[in-house]
Image (tube, rainbow, N blue to C red; front, side, top):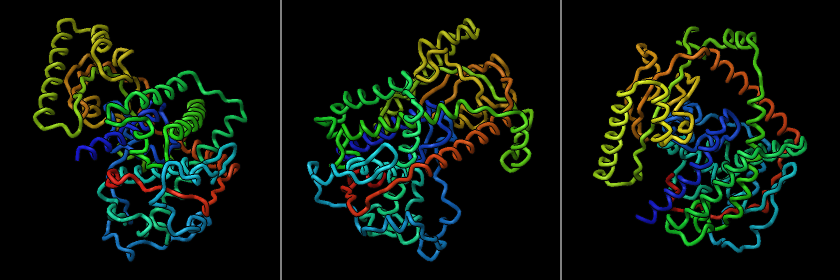
Length: 440
């Protein structure tokens, strides 16, 4: 049991690092798998990049074959059925097949070790998105994936996740190839983030009870994946996503385009008044600093300690209640790396961007500049300071995001068409998923 908890926490770290980086970069598009890899956002994490355990309308029945609509087989689906089973349960780390090139796209190739990473990310991300509804969609985590039919035609689940992983690789590789052709250089800040991730993994494996970085990575991806393989994955990930994010940020949207989108999509703006503004707010996060599997008594003790500290900070602030004083308290006490250095400030916060308790406090109808309070979330206690309503309107923020996101999807799709992916399914081999993580 302890070994299982240790390795499940290691998986959370590996997946969580990538999701946190995607959020920090402000990616509203792109990483289909990673955007599904967290069931609950950080206190300051945009909620539209997280998922909820809502079953798709077509899959809320019994989950039987009869309840599934017929699916027209695509060339990609047909290719994925090249082999009925891709997993070799006897595979070892030094198997010669693992270093064979089996996928190409643009300037990039994958060997079987690389394929295992993309495949595993697809599987865990799917489980984390659908949660309890995964079983309704036909997955029994106690059985091999190749023995179970997926929701996509007559593909089994192993074939389904493998096919989906090829799409993710194509996106990464196609965008990275385009970026390189344009002479794109990874910005220093992104390069530093990447190096911090790698150094963090190098330094943390012993704390999780592993004797090497390779063993740490293999506990999440299986015996075929080494630390150097995961590092190569991160190289591609950072380069492609940094390039995409730059394109997104550089897009401009005119007032006429905002009005047109608003008028043509009334369902998206139902209940959103044209006078609903975004807000500017400061906060100080006092984190709980306990493991998810900590005993109830330990968790409660940490909660009370965090609450007490939050109350003490608020009381201290009220002795000198100014925005400048609050900013200084945040710099010295907040545990939110996304806002600590700028005094806990978040500007242009729109409804639904933050987790629910945080959001509800910010958008209380009675909220006035200078208001303070304490909000509890699953991540701890937040000492709040309401700065002001912003000059931006929520409907415009929402419309701009939608217009830019649609443009970005269209751009990515067009680039992917220019750089097709060519999997050699006959020579792809997978290793078993780590059993302790199969239930997600």
